[in-house]
Length: 392
Image 1 (cartoon, rainbow, N blue to C red):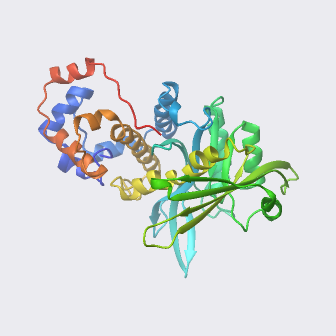
Image 2: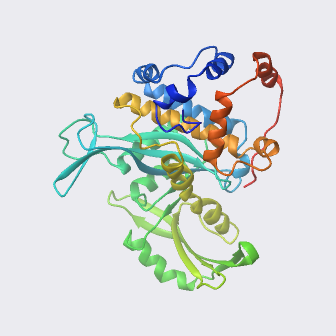
Image 3: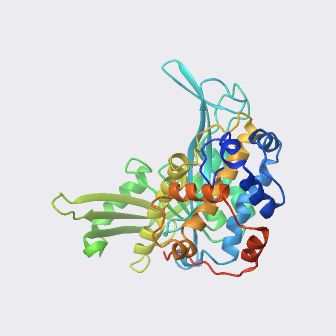
């Protein structure tokens, strides 16, 4: 359903439950295609933690197989971007765990989730672990939030991957003492977006010292039309509200794109880094590190919401089933990215498909009109091949 981007559970009955589809599933999995309602009844009773583990194991296998080695930062660290997004909204209370928001006298009930995705410069955005942002029950005095969810998620992530070299990427919600403390405690690297109105003492020291620093300039892009100016200050002391002392590093990148017959476009980025910055590493940390955070929003949430997966569609009203569908969607996204970015597809279909949605449609039609025999499928399974991915 998700791989073929069918956008609703009822489409299984209309599009997949045909003789060819049943024969294909019987050959591959030893069973037919379940009715959408039967599938839903099973999902509502599954153990959510076990389904989450299925998602995590897929990414763990890619890491263990060294598939993602070329996409590491500083030759060691895996980029883990963290961000939250909304998945369901109701006009009436959906379950005891709903978050609530009242505006102009109207109350909305909604569900959010915090995602930790492994992102890569070539466009990969794989869900590693998720933490649902939800209230413990009705009539709570203080609602759950993204930061609280992050503290829970970080603990789970460290326990599940105790030795994985993680490089954390976060938006402007995350520059605070507790996040710095957890990253130091877990021995994670990090680059976190810093806004001008946050952490006044850090911004003041950076603004006072950065004019004294010699900037690093590089020209990149087509015809070297984009100029990037990097300025940074190391070893800025910061004391948080819990009286913990931190030493952080701040870098600013001003990017100017020269456009034909248009005014140049200038964009400014600023991050807090937990790595000291040098002439040798600042470009990689910014371009291959901090700048990659947006992939969780674009290749992650945007694709899942607007690319045919219909993340915000209510595939079920059951709060347990809702989470199971969410994880199955993440599995489908991982598989789809591996297919779309692998050279096997580009070797066989040199003209491509025009879009990811077109590929999903072709996949659905191949499933509905499969003419291969069980012997044909077994021959393909017995044939060893090697698939390479696009370089970073």
